[in-house]
Length: 280
Image (cartoon, rainbow, N blue to C red; front, side, top):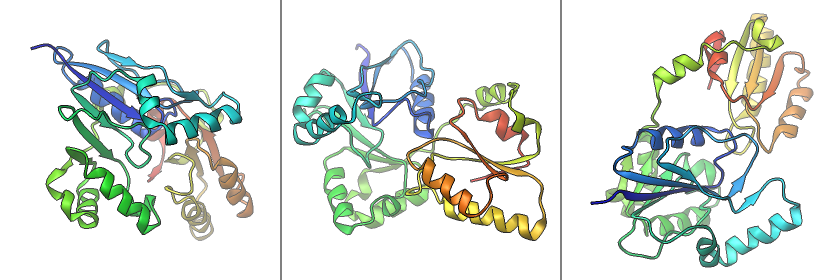
């Protein structure tokens, strides 16, 4: 038998986030003699790609953050109202397995072929992501079409099973994989940054207030400084759409000198190793 062909698709593979690192680890560790792998991102950003092995191809994206807003608006509507056409433009219909790696915002329709194994990956709490019951119900109907639904922890698997009891037999739990040897090697990198030479506490997250609780982090750190007189700064690694909103939160709490947004950091592991505390 020849190699099986796998398609992973997600909203972006170039935002520098955790899902990209996890997917890179997965595809690098799948047997090269058994699988040919394609990765499709819908929107391309500027943070670069995570390393992959030679049996992995990163396909041309559908759109880019550099395009003018009017063009992105047209492409967005094209994807929503003509999903079959967009799929035909972006991928060939020759895969044995297709994986939607960001099912909360499904960026591409699956193949309609019945012999294609279809897998959806859940990375976040459905209740936290979808506030309206109607959207949760629509997600359940969509998930019913797939062969397997992967949750990254037992709690997430159980939440999904409670929301959609009819999916219980399709649910799998697969923990996020980590290559600890690679992480330890990367943690030895020397950083040229003035904050790196100070004592600090570190938090790492995409700058979005919808999924990440930055108000509690900022107010909690301020309270900790008031009560304990700690001298360390809080360094936040990451970027995202709510950066200006979070900067305003920090300013409103008069914490600009104590809470520093460092932006997207390609290698966060030296910061983790040197930090007095990691706040998750």
